[in-house]
Length: 154
Length: 254
Image (cartoon, rainbow over all chains, first blue to last red; front, side, top):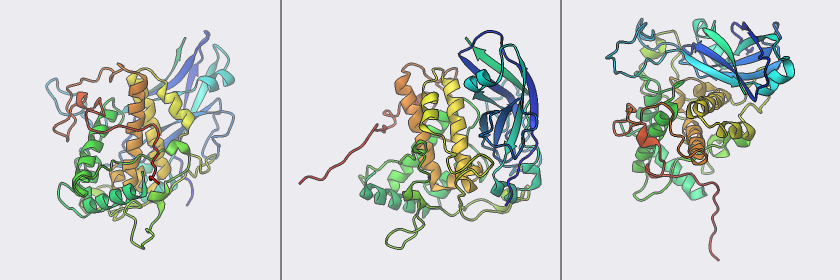
């Protein structure tokens, strides 16, 4: 069974001028409704894709999504409410997007000069048996997020 | 865990698997995912307290299923040792020829309609496909001791919880098969050993960072569907009646 890679996305960020002791890539509004996947991060490698190894010099780390695996309810069951009422004391909806943080301190230092603009190519990787078992809509476009920030600490 | 402890644990789990009411394995595995409602908490600060409460309730029912007076606790799988799936969970058969209840379990109690809602074929038994198989990954795709050490050094609870949850996700995907899918993951007996390891790492972090608490998480937040536990009540493993040994050793006199 062939490996299955869904849509990669690229973001452009800027390294700080000042020295730092820690650097994190933080992804906000990450969808986790579909299949589980690993999101591999490659710095300044816009062509990174399914064939790019994690031993590649541009590899900076991964985050992992333990996916909800599709909706088992009726229509609308897995759609988070657009706005939560002030007196809604129920637990938060299961599918509210999450944030993911990857510590990339040493990789950023070695690959990006202070003050330099750089790209991060995010390549999602789905286990082949999941890709083979789950319907196409759960393994397509699995990688979705609102924004990515570089956070550095002095 | 000694050989006799392992036998006791296996017999307790088998007894739980044989129960099809709200004391049984099927019921407690189903709490995490299917059948609806899916109750597990991921991607939020209560990830660790919720799963500690889940382990606690599961272990209480496991103890109920063992001979009176048994003191066997849920074992943890130290995946950071990079040795793959533990032999006790990997062998399909026991030396006496019987099926090993730790190797897998039937996936039962889930209406086909809940699988079929999006065209997913119903699963009747757990499966595993260990080892990441993508480019650059060999069989060493489990988090290592260095990664655990990095996570244990984080001082802020939410930072620690987020990073530990990512290691947790990585292990679920490494095991593959049933374990890689939230709706059915808890039906794999290995799920419980994995989550006990996660709980152990949280307990070790609590020892290293006394007073760090649970960040902005309210202590009085209930942890449904575990009606007698709040976030605050999960903060001490000893108050819940267990602890994690740093190392174990046993000897027979003579």
